[in-house]
Length: 155
Image (cartoon, rainbow, N blue to C red; front, side, top):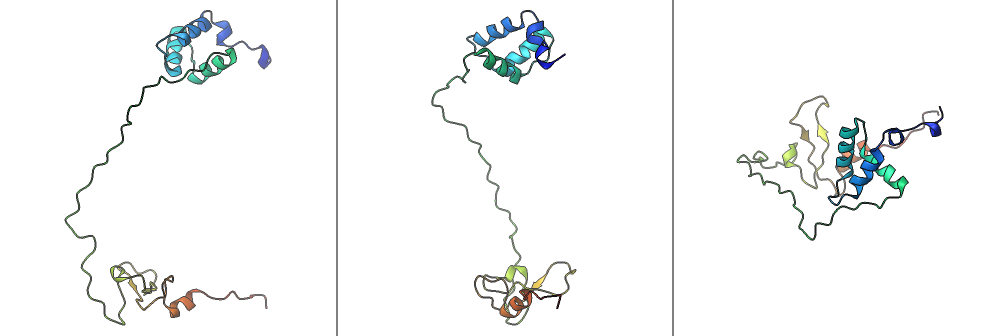
């Protein structure tokens, strides 16, 4: 049987279309999902909200708008403010000695962030700590080591 010759529940179930039009025109303004549930229960069929919307459009029914509630303020979610923890966020930082590696807590905007020691070492890591120009992460020595020129390998 071709698609156009198939008959759906609207044509084979007597009273379904009339009941849908009755619920659609009801002054209570049921939502499409409520109407779909009511019709599914009454006629022992599976009817979805989208099938009702599509049928209404094909029949040329008036679009349904949500009822206007007036100018009521929206309820906004209120987030609870967590109290500040009693413990400090960072441990006390020992004073910086020139030439010694720095911990993560001692790094500043103008310090080199080049990690020292083996890569597989576990934290706490230590960093170079020498002066790094603003806008760079490494001092001049480590910057030149990290940015190398591309080499031609076929010569």
